[in-house]
Length: 469
Image (cartoon, rainbow, N blue to C red; front, side, top):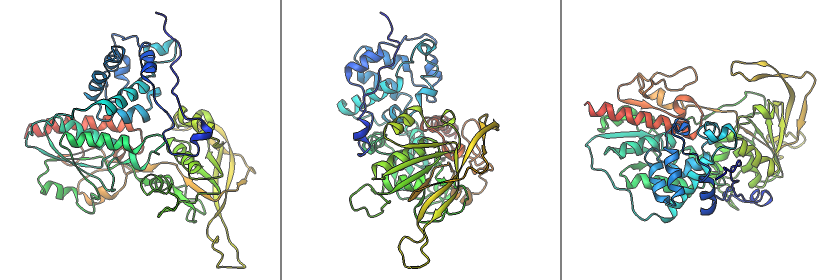
């Protein structure tokens, strides 16, 4: 049978509809679509896609199960190595990992691996009735700091081996960046909650509203009987540009903006923690988080949303799919531009004017690309005399995050690098015996799947460490 050269398109809400609601944009494959896309897999003997997956999902085998219409069997194969299949099928950058090395991609579009993973996970969540079997306890206790992708993955892998695992989460809802950072229209909260519930059924305890470093320290966790600790606290410290006007009302970090929308329900009619819903918004940055913030602002009622990014479209770090969705929804990309000042409203004739101190524009300069910098990308250079102003009422700074220094400052002997990332060896072991770390707390902001990979590595190392005790 001839191979279809094109990957089957993912059905989505129409742009003019989805731009005004928080429902999931991508609608998922039907059974017939999944079978058709699965038929494109060549079932290669060397399986390059498996090596391209940070958690080494056995991709050809689960796709073969789809071809056989054994969707639960496909799920179980994925679940052998991934604790978050429904999440990965939605937010994992497959195009730069497993799909990039797909043998079919040498001539045609790669197999839609992520879309098939999502289909299988959603089928399981809708049809499966049996709960996972809780393993017999091996008598060892492990604490996990943070319930993001690295922490949940580490917890899941250890729970499957019989460890008594407790996950401590600073916020009131488990999921970490999966719930506070990624909007509902990309990753529904119910999907994350279902994955967390599956881990609980395996025996994982999840304790919210505990800030490690304040409520409890890592030293106190050991005093409580935990024999090892995994730190997956993420990178929640927002970066700013240190330009004039960043302290004005109406300037947000992307973390604050998305957390208010995702967990504090700023999208409600009369929110208790409001974000300005009208007016014009500038989002500074070009990554996935910037796309999320811009598209969220649009759904919150912004009249016009700009993406302000200092390089060109070719250097934009966000996933191609997210950029395309943003463009379809009407986000205005102002490329090769960089902010130099956020302008404030000031009415000296009436100091009681409620607009005083609020954002009233953002001053930018135009850029051109010069020689490559240390990252290999061409360095943006200011074009002299190119200043211009965008008329905006709010600014969202989305230029990256750093690991929160709280754990380092309250944990003796924990070494960090100059960016605040916890230093670990190849097994995720820190400079403290029994303390492991992974994900954004080590690398700074990165992808969900890379954090999951770090959680798996650490879980294996923790198991080896405790089995020797």
